[in-house]
Length: 203
Figure 1: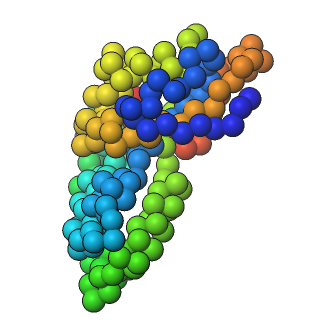
Figure 2: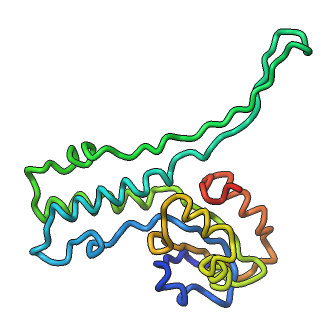
Figure 3: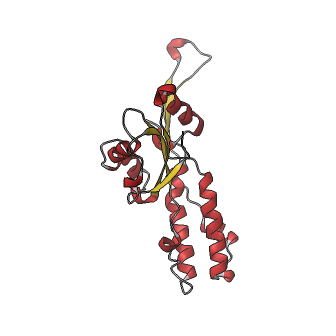
């Protein structure tokens, strides 16, 4: 087994291994300093912080619980009097209030150094975020499986759109496994999905 590799999509897709299978995941990619508007020492720090807030608001719903549905019935009475109910619940589209970011980064400290400190901490914190999707490439290479996702021939692309994201906001990570004969890949996939519960793997 080789060490985990990280790739930015879609521009680094051709660097993904094309001679070996393995396990992979998709994660939310934290924007670069350039994308946030921190181009040089003269960058508008207020704009960068506003861009950070916009990003956090956009990705926050991605980590909400999925829609729940099921059935309920009354109990403790005769069967012929019992009532049955279909229940459906959807999480509210709650976004992190801007006041949280303001507490971390007071407006009266709008300096480039302070902004960079806050952004670096939040960027590092995003490495602890759960994966959006976990999959395997057992009958094909990791690169070939990624091509299928990016070509929109799998359901994943629709799921990404459904949570308001695009491929450019996604980071691809993989662990190449050279000897797939020693591992039941499907059970490995199910094990990892049951542990991390990636939202976009839920069918």
